[in-house]
Amino acid sequence: MAAMMSIQLHNNLQKKLDPVLQNFAFHKQADLLHNGVFLDQNKMKVQVDKCTGYVSVMLYARNLSITWGDDKRYWTWTFMPEPNHPGSLIEVAELLSVCWLEAKGEFDASLLMSGLTYEVVFTVKLKCDGYGWDDHPVTLKLEEGNRITECKEKLNNKPKDQWIELNAGTFLNCGCETGMVKFSLFETVGGQWKKGLVIKGVTIRPKIPN
Image 1 (tube, rainbow, N blue to C red):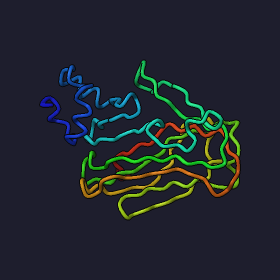
Image 2 (tube, rainbow, N blue to C red):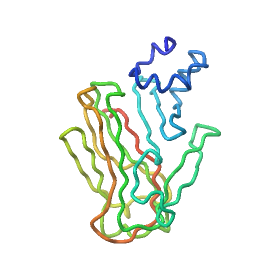
Image 3 (tube, rainbow, N blue to C red):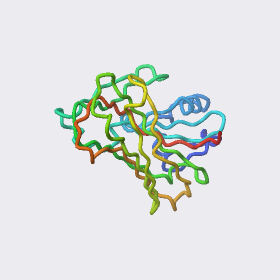
């Protein structure tokens, strides 16, 4: 894609974007990437920062593996508009009731710019009528090769009915040497029934120093 020379994309990622961008002029391609381009039937979004040129990826909930996610007794899926994308809808997963919470996914980090440190962030919302989050925190886990990091978050202390970010950790992208990065959000030890968590997805983005 010659018109994309000023934006550095991995060849395989560029091939994914080609069918969406090829009918647009160069300046329009750049505008689309800066705003974010949907792929895989709106299960994924690729965005290029206008100032740095860095690429970030959003994997929406349909791109994650959610235990019992397709069982209507435990989860419900709804469409919602994505800000700054008129007419585009994404699916979010809302927890109705489970005692075993697990949502996980993976991404090929070699598709991203190497030499940068990336952070992996879950975007979720806890509804006001949610329950079961008082006693046990959720665990956020990041696996990159043999390196595993975990952290815990108490959701009952978080703002309700608004999107919040839960950071699963960071990794240094060494290109092909990094390969698949796996991430998960879970609470499986308490046995307490839980309700009201809405999962939007996971963002993999360059970590910008403060």
